[in-house]
Amino acid sequence: MPREPDPDWILEQRRIIGDRVRSQRMHANLTQENLRDLSGVERLTIQRIESGATDARIGWLLRIADAMGIGLRDLLDG
Image 1: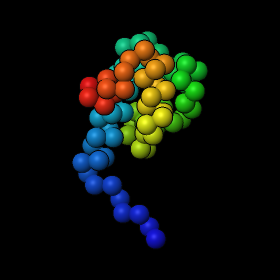
Image 2: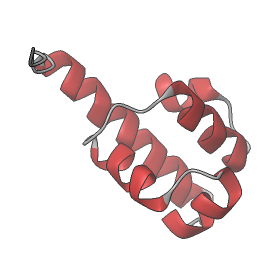
Image 3: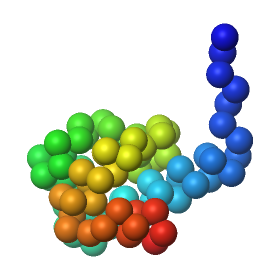
């Protein structure tokens, strides 16, 4: 059975989290490739998270935050 599409508020939060990931990455002077190397999260996955195109798994966000030396809260709360 097909899954219902996510409501707009979820899509908006996904974009906001993606923007925070991108902002923190750029603040750390990291490319997506650098972040891939530090976090172990594939570059394409990072790109999809930053664009809001995918639901970010908590494990991916934890790895990304750790690689940038920040807390998960910095990605979720801004």
